[in-house]
Image (tube, rainbow, N blue to C red; front, side, top):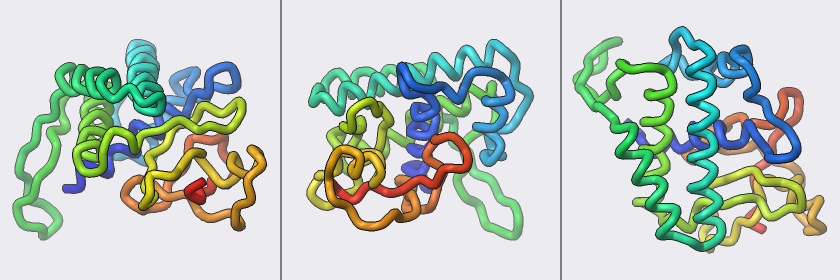
Amino acid sequence: MDLASYADLAIELVNTHEPGRRDTLRDLDDLRALLAHRPHLGGRVGHRDLDTVRQLREQLRAVFVAAGAGDEEEAVERLNALLIQHPIHPQLARHDARDWHLHLNEGGSVPDRYAARAAMGLAVKVDEHGIDRLGVCRAEGCQRVFFDGTAGRSRRYCSDRCAAEDGLAVPGPRRARGTNGHAVGDGRPRGKTATRDSGQ
């Protein structure tokens, strides 16, 4: 099981809201859309779940903001608080002709499962690469978050588009990649193509 891949959950959730600009997690339909391509997070959701996920979004954003500002102690403290509040429950499972392998317990509410996976994913990425890999886009007016996967820890923008709008020369657009290297949505409104940061 690639627990680090769950860091994408945190990034995708935080990027549903750019303070002062847009919010794509306003109602239950938005929440269902967020979960639609995550079958392991399926289940019935209500308004209380929406409120809980929106609160989680702000808690996760605070981790990125602290890390982006260079306050590593604050970022780690906030992430540890989420890990304590939402512990994971691993278990062994065997299915689809596969031998025994690790799964995360599917019990609990949708927000609890989302939070546990998102927090653990970020924690694993931090353990492997460092807390300074978490950042907030530096383009004017953009507050989207990202994981810096560049060799020299040089990423400053969430996308090539933001780098270009900030006056930097960047290559043509490329398909966005998740923290595990797979193409993922970037949380922008549907119909717009995401791009991967050029390392600027």
